[in-house]
Structures are given as structure tokens and as C-alpha cells.
Amino acid sequence: MSQVFGGAVLLPGETGNGLHASFETDADLVRLIVGDDEIGSWRREECDVSPSGNNSFHMVLGGEELTFTPSSPSAFAEAMEVPLAPAPSADTDDERPRYDYDAAIDEVIAKVKPLRNSSDEDEILSKGMLVGIIGVSTFVMAGLAAASVML
Image 1 (cartoon, rainbow, N blue to C red):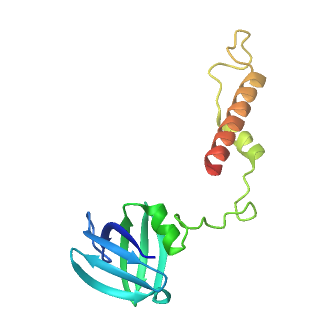
Image 2 (cartoon, one colour):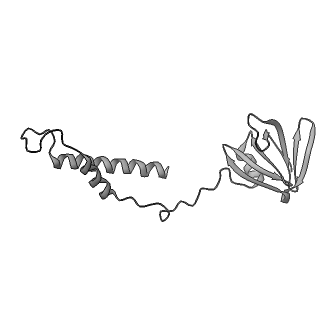
Image 3 (tube, helix red, strand yellow):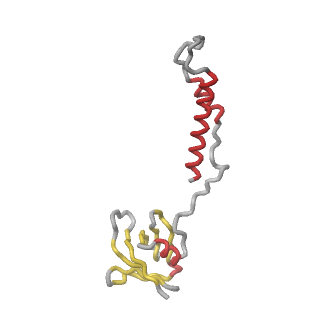
């Protein structure tokens, strides 16, 4: 049973909306059709399809490269037996640089200059309060950064 997928085709280096085209797939062949004309047909094993992001697919058909953006990316990915999105990079915890939070806090504290003389009795923030505020702020920022990396 063959399936037809409409969409847009771009050749390498092209930008814009692309050329309206259709891919017809069955168990053995993939055909590229523009209007009423068949541009080419290739055996499935001659077709290399990989996701390129933004619901588009990089295709190598018999040595020719193009980008296809189907109107139904998930159905096209399923028919061509490829994932819808590029595989995530191997970003393990071992590869991430370690951040020394204590050294960062000490560095920030060392650069902070009091607004008033530390011997004044009417000081707005004590050194302990300032260290606490900076420490809590650093941990909140680190938590937000970690959460954004996990998303």
C-alpha cells in the first residue's frame, strides 16, 4: 500500500518556502512528484532520511541531497521509519563541567563593599545577613539554571 505525503522541497543552500512536491512511498520505492511529473524514484534502501529539526527531514536519494518539510511530519516519519526529531546529544553528567558554588559565593562576598563603615551601629545589613542573601540567591539561580538545562 502506498502513501503520499505533500510538502515542500529545498535543495542544499536554498532558502524560502521551497517547491511544492509530494513523496509517494510504498514497501519498495520512494517517488518524488512535482505537479503531474515524477522527478525520480528510488529504492527504499537507496534513501537515507534523517530529521533535521523544525519538522523537516534531510534526505539523500540516490546520492542527491534535499530537505523535505512534509505537511504531516509525524506520519512521514512513521512511514519512513525515522524519528521525528534529531537524537539528543549524549550530554551526561560526567561530561558537564563541575561548578564550585562555594568558591563562587566567596568570590562574590569578597567583591562586595559595604555601603557604610562596618563599625557603625546603624548598619542596614550585617555581614551575616549579606552572606545569607547572596548564598540563597546563588542557590536559587543555580536551581533555575539546572531546571532550564533539564527542560
